[in-house]
Image (cartoon, rainbow, N blue to C red; front, top):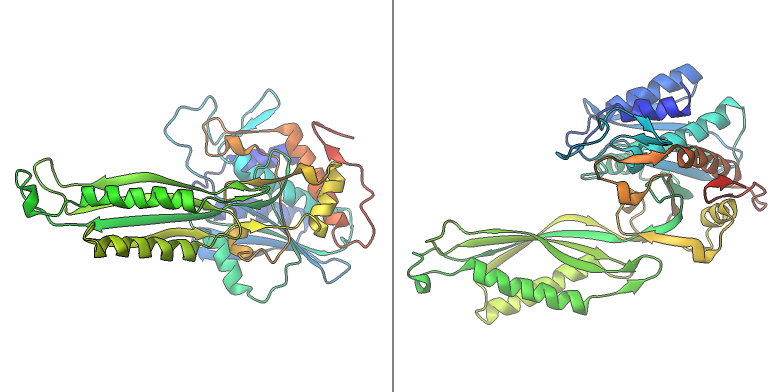
Length: 390
């Protein structure tokens, strides 16, 4: 099974999350490892959910981790030109759910490490390939790995999320809040007898709008923070004053913004509304809390990536989406490179695809990272840039 066939095989596995079924992808890696003689480790989270690891010993005590997730979002209800689990090839592209986000990057990392192993090449650093479950929902795989490996050393982390072959040194934080306000029901013709939770929610949304402006921050290369109310629900029926209204807010943050500080400030402002009899009762429930991460351009893993791509500091980027790096590296203490062949604009979209050329370039890129990270001397490899190998 060549590199293209292997990616097609992964794309033909339905690992949509929920429910995940990532162990089906793990089994594909196990079969390949048995065929090629690679050592591996499987950690079960549930009967059909697992993490998968391959570790190749290097010349030094440095530890390089290559990480990607095996789950995908569902293919959705929109019609695809090609079946989302076909791995169909057309016009130099491979189609399928996960082609861009991120089975192409996952396969590229594994094949790069496999190639080094089969050629008997000993990398400068010990290299671990870690394929996780659950990133698309709750990062259960990354959390399970962290729980079992609290003292495990990681000197550099590479995450194969789709970056369109750009060098990404960080991502924004994500805070999802569920905010509920409560009132009292009464007949719709006698609103003064009740407490209208929908009216009160309008005041809460106004507070969030004010906080969005107050909290606005910019951090290169991640961009600007943001806040959006994305869901609202409330009411009983037309002739009943509503006693409950709920919203969900999607907040994206950049360093040094603190999620806990945001929540405390929001609660303080809502408490003030209660004191002023503007609202009755409320709850604030965090649904997701993932910090931003950002790596200094001077770190070795970023310097090596830049040399391989032939770029400069101006060619370093940030992304809006979050990654397992927010779990594995929540305080940005581990130098982290995010790099993958997929295009982030295609993630979670119908007709998701990855360029075959980009996929194959990524294998070479990861291979050169493996063989250069931990070296004392500068990278001597030919740069991989643009649409071709120079």
